Structure formats: structure tokens, C-alpha cells
Length: 238
Image (spheres, rainbow, N blue to C red):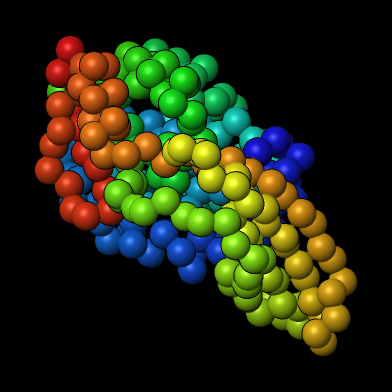
């Protein structure tokens, strides 16, 4: 998704994700961060929903990595509104493959980001993240083995009332090729049932199988650690 497309989706982002994966992550992630005190890197921090959680659940400095200007603007505003976050969160305007910090961090958190990387780029992703982690450092990301989706019709995925407007997210799977899924989204705003705004975004997501993912991470010097269903935990061993 381009930066322009991210800007179209941003007004709907918190509404949709608070209704999606974020509540589950708030339950599953904190136990895995216990003992992390010095530093955490968050890859793809978005608007800061998970950044807030990391600040609340750890005493660590947080590197919040977010390349999209539209997302990063909301993220920085959220950080600026929280005195503790202002003290501990550094917002970095980089992509995951470009980030580099002064010293290795204790943990890396990557929520709803893995699907942005095709197979050809994941090898580089794991190498970059391994360099950013201290030996024994923890890599955490959300992942579940799921059946491949099938192309279908446009359907309503969520509707949210804000004042006198209803914000709607519509989506459809357009094409599936291997682990790559191409989708189309419509972001609509209604007033009294009448559409007063509509933007269309297309995106590609990549869904690696568990065996392939495990092989990639092992080759990059990671070993699997315990994690609840819905999250994956891997430690840097080399």
C-alpha cells in the first residue's frame, strides 16, 4: 500500500482495528514482555495503538518504527498526548528493512506487519531484525495458520458510528496466487444513510505457511519460544 493509500485508510484505522486484532493483542502480548526493561522496537507502529500498550506494560525505551507519513502523524500525536510516552518513545520514519538503532534491543514487536512482506523480501527482513536484537532477544509477531481465502463479492466488514456519521469498511478478495492475496477495500462515510465520502484502496498480503516461516527464521538464527495461540515468539540465537 502506498503512502497515499495509507492516508485514505487512516481515518478508519483505529475504529476498525479496535474492532479486530487489537483487543486480543492487549491480552496476549503483556506476559511475553515481562522482564523487558531496557528497550523495545516496534515495527510498523501504525497509529500507536500497540505502542501505548508497550509503554504501559514495560519500563523500556520504545523505538516506534513507521514509514507511512499519515500513520506516523497520528502516532506522534498519540505519543505527544501521553507524558510517559513522550519521555520513552522515539518515533522513527523508516521501513522495517531500513531501521538501524545505536544498540541492539531486548525485544522486537511486529503486529499485523508480516503480511506486507513477500517471500523474496522476508529473508532480508529476518536478517535485519536479527541485527537489531541482542543475543537471546525476543521477536514477537501475530500469526495463525489459516486456510487460503477465496475470491468473493464485496462485503461489509465493519460499520462505526461517530457523531452523526457512519464509517464503513468494505472489502473483497480479488485474487489468490500461492501465498499472495490481492484485496480491494472501500472506505465509506454515510450521513443519514447517504454516502458522503468514498475511497478505494487495493492491497497485497502475503500468508506464509508455518513450515516455511519456521525454516526462514531458523536459517536467520532464531529459535522458537513459547507463545499463546495467535502470537509467535522467536529468540535470536546467533
